[in-house]
Structures are given as C-alpha cells and as structure tokens.
Amino acid sequence: MILHQLVGKKNGFSLIEVMIVGVIIAIAMFAVFQMYSFSLFQYPKINNLLQGNSILTKEAEIINSKGFTQIDSFLSSNYPKVIKVGGTTFTLTYSINNPYSWCKVILLNLYWKEGTQTKSISLEILRSAP
Image: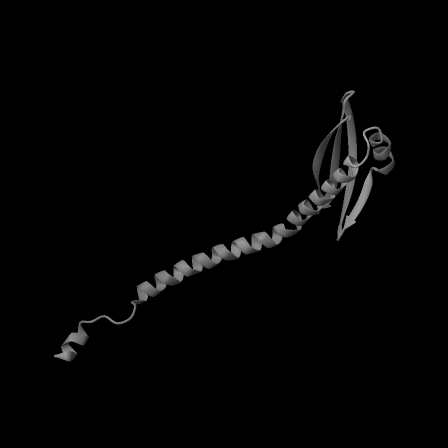
C-alpha cells in the first residue's frame, strides 16, 4: 500500500521546468552584463564631466571673490587657462557682456578632447554692482 502511494507522487522538476528557469536566469545575467559593460565605457566621459563641473565651480568662486570693478582686468590677465587633470587637458575661456551699467554677464566655457570629439560645458555668472 505504501509503495502504491509513492508511485503516483511526483518528485523533483521536469526537464522543461529546468530549461525555462535556465533561460530566465540567462536573460537576467545578460541584462546585468550589458548594464555593467555600458557603465564601464561611460566612466571616462562621466569623469570628464564631473572634473569639468568642478573646475567651473572653482573658477566661478574665484571670479565672484573679486570686486565688481576688478573683474575685467582679472579675467583678461588670467584667461584663457589650460588645466591638466589626470590624462585630460581642459581649456577654460571666457566672454563678458555688459548689457547694463549695473551688471556684468560672464560666460565661462570649458573645452576638452574625448577621442576625436571636442566636448564642452559652460557656466554663466551674473555679477551686479554693489
């Protein structure tokens, strides 16, 4: 009687169930690998953007520390500027616009090479007279 109950009982997984689980795991691992490899190739680009943002922020703080009347002479004597960080060379330039007598608009442009392409980011500073 006990033998008769065990014969009808199913033990383990069928081959089809194992194959389905294997396919699902393979698809999931492929997706994770693709995401990982994409992030590895994007790291230098992201790193250059972060470095560039840091450079622009630092330069903006230096410019903002100068008096309103000193800005023109400071910019003309210190820019363009070449900054090397790691293996990347950044070139920092500026342009200044005096739309009104009470303010100056300073545009900082940062350029660098990524392979054969030239990349850039900009930061605009509005400085008003005291």
